[in-house]
Image (tube, rainbow, N blue to C red):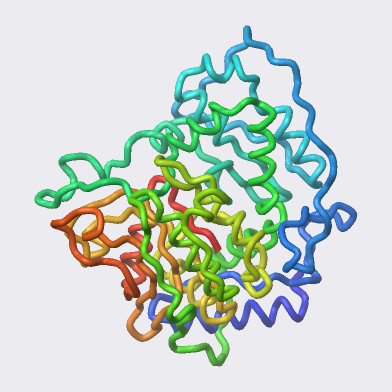
Length: 407
């Protein structure tokens, strides 16, 4: 049963959705009185700026003996990814991660399909499904979906967008590259990286629950004043310095607006673990939680899959995050001319800063960090503030293989 406070918040959200041009459900701020897990097992600490979190658990997962003779199970196309029992505590989750992570020899002798099913494996955090690399998902993916995910995106094939040239990657880490990077790690380092990613997910599971419930429920409308438009981070736009640095450039802007200190993109590339293959969205979310104060207003940032949303939900969630929390969204799109007409060419997966909206126009304001002209003399000057139709930004997000955002 909803408490009066949470019921009132749901009513407020219903009003927002009723009066927006794209009506749908969004999530509410974290309710300090809500606990989706046992109170005795708090979430691990992510940042000293988030007072509601408690110190990080000290247990260290054990690394079982490698057994190279036992192959990793390969999923059939229709078979769902195996799902462990629900983790009701952080210690449960730590144990599950260590026990399900394959040994080095088994992993490196496995085919790409088996590696994908292992590196993108899913866990149930209380009632929320979280898949490594993918974020919170409404449904655990099947083997066929994981195989498709790690294949080259259809939007970058030669026959796509007839008449539009395909240009160089701009810097997000593709699912195939994510799987390859994780699979190349020694097991001890890999388990540490997986737990590092899951810290934000565990701490943000209440937000994920609200996103899931409120995106599928019909809440009653009531007269509520919401900003007709909202814009944050004025003057903090940046432009990526290398063709594969959209992650560091996006994070440079987000952090600069937070503390008014403009650290170099090179320093953020190091912190984010960026390579010539790109930057993982889980690293973007982690650094936002650890290095900025944005979680004070928006709650713990999480990686959220949006494949089960529609354009109305996408826009309403942005309005809530930008208009009420006044905190940026990490946009994760496929940089295609059909969605971003200021481009001269199609590009790869990409990060942008979500930093505002206009309700009447149905647009979301972004900072585009990629200047096409800088990397191609035939390209357009493309970096800086842009206003994109919410439906176009949503479809660009779905065009990216990951189909997720950071918020």
